[in-house]
Structures are given as structure tokens and as C-alpha cells.
Image 1 (cartoon, rainbow, N blue to C red):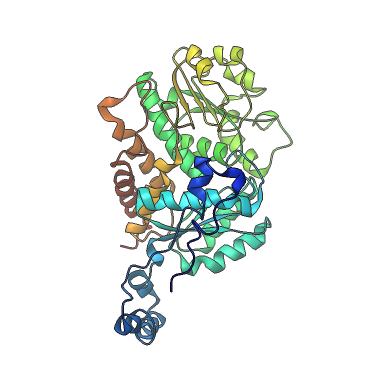
Image 2: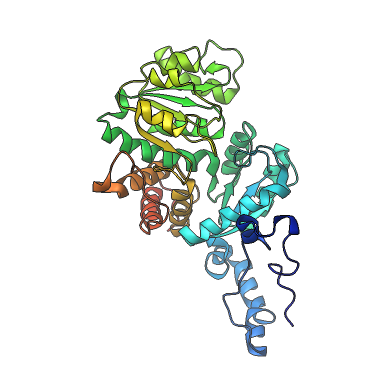
Length: 400
């Protein structure tokens, strides 16, 4: 006999009745469905005991068979500790679950990838690493999500070294891939080349570090990364190891130092992943035909109307303005491509290939208000997946 439907029994809390956002979330956004029929005794004997024992024995003798006879190779764990959720900050694992569920349904909708949200009741680096490593046999990949910096860097790097499946911190690399795709097209519009473009990245957390790194790998020649205390450079003595290494590869190369206002003078690109507000006079000091990406949500670092007064190309993280830098353009296709070739990792080459594929989809429609495709463009997932799979083979991490 069927049990109660949690989407209607119990109903949502009366305090939120009639609110369409809460109504959509009643009972959660996900469910598990069987892919096989269970209509009679014969079906049961095949799906479960005794038939399932034969499959178990075969996998025990040849573990690679898990790739053919379980859901593992098409399933990603979406893992968080709830310490850096959206723009809400450290709200804990229970409050993070709606976001992780949302991530899971996006994986399925846009990449055909199954995903399981996992919210961990610990913020300890060692405990997170150990827990994820122990869960890894159940998954084909690990998507780390909303884990605060600098712990996220160590967690990702160590898990990548321990596991032979893709490990990907989307707050870093998903943001970086889409930002690079958008910037590639914005540079085309403004007739700039990466090597001669001056970029200011505001924010040195997970996203800021990853954005700066992918821009370096894409050939951008002059980058200054700014945190709350100013430009990351080796004159400072308060830098973490991650920030110190980044300073050496960015501002140190051009002896850039000081405040955000100092490095914005004459800059071609502002890319904000930090929150806060940039004064209008600082935006006005940028180069002609400037590019402004204010990606903080829900309030961009540079208000859109202000940005348009001083910049030619403007992008945000919001869906109600043109040029939305949305991670959903990247992560479903990246994992789809990685899974299609049974990749052991997600390489820098795979990320660059994803960004190039996204940028190319805009094609002849390229305009100041159209520098990235829509998440609902049906070409996005397949194009990114194809590019990522090819790059995985080129980088030697594909197993088929």
C-alpha cells in the first residue's frame, strides 16, 4: 500500500501558504524513481534476491563492472558543509539542503546526470575529506558546493589526489568557466586581446581565485586580484599561502598594489565576485569601452544602471538582466562529458574547452547584451559535454 505523499501530507507550513517559492519546495524538489518494473514475483527475483546476487558476485570478481551494472558512473554527489551558501554565508547543513536539491535537479535537467545532495554536519577539513572519500565508491564524481575558503582549496586538492573520479568545486570552477566564456566574447566585441587586457578581480575567495587562475591559463596578461585589504601582492605580509601564490602570478608581474580604486584607473575589465559596492567615481575611472561583470547575488557590486553609464558590456549573476553568468551553463555539461569518457579527473584543459564551447555558441548573435547563451538553449549541455570529453582524451584522463 502506498504511503503518504510528503509533497501534500503534511502540507507546507501555514506561515508560507500561497508563496509560490515555498509552494514549489513543499516535500522537496527531488524523488527517486525506479528504472525497472516490479509488477510480479519474477520482476522481484531479478531486481532483488536471488538474481541480484549474481551481479554482486560478478562485480566482486571484476570491480570495473560497476560501470555497466549500477548507477554509479552517471551519479554525482553534491557535497556541502553549509558554510558559504549563495550570498547567505554560513547557514549550516540543514538550511543548505534546498540549494543542494536545486543543484541536483539542474544536473538532471541540463546534463542528464543523476545527483544526490549530501549535507555534512561538520566543518572540519579532515572529517569532510574522510567522509567524502568513504562515500566515493557510490559515485562517479564529487561536486563540492558552498564550502567556505580557504578550506575549500585544501579539501578539493586532497580529494583530487585521493580519488580516481572527477572532483570539482563548482563555486570555483563553474564560475570561472562561465566568466571566461563571457569575457572571451566581451573582448571580441571591444576589440581587445587577452594578452593586452587589464583585469581587476574583486574578491579572493573560492570564485575569485579560480577566475584569476583560468584567466591566466587563457592568456590574460595583466590581472590584479583585490581582497578587503587591497591588492594581493608580495609587499603584504598577511597573505594566506593560496593568496601569496596568486599574488606572484598576478599583480607582482606588473608591480600593482594599493586599493581597488588604485588599480581600477585605466582597467579594461572589472570582475566582481565579492559583494560590497564600488563607488561610481571608481567605475568611471576605467578605460573606454570598459567591461563590468558584477556577479554578487542578489546585489551586483556595480549597480546595473551605473555600470551602463561607464561600461560598454555589463554582466551580472542575475536572471532578470541580460548576460547572466550562471554556473548552470557549465557544470552539467562538464560532468556529462567527464562521465561519457569515464574521466578520472577534470583538468584545466577540460575547463578551458568548456569555456570555449560556451563562447562559440553565441556565434553571429554576439552583441553587447548577448555574450553568453541562455541556460535553456538546448545546444549548451551537448556542446560543453562534447568539448570536455575531447579535452579529457587529449589530456590523458579518459578511460574510454
